[in-house]
Image 1: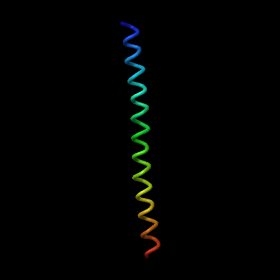
Image 2: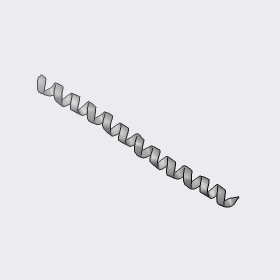
Image 3: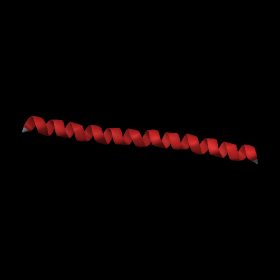
Image 4: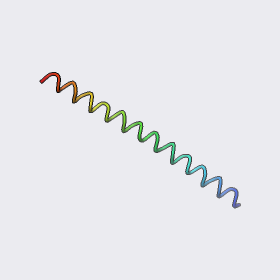
Length: 45
């Protein structure tokens, strides 16, 4: 039973790390889009 609990804890930690990486990648893409849009507008003004 203790081993099963430890496996669950390890899996939850792994999934949490994977979620954070995916979330950060999404934020990076959105930020890149905003910056690209700003640069485009800046050159047109």
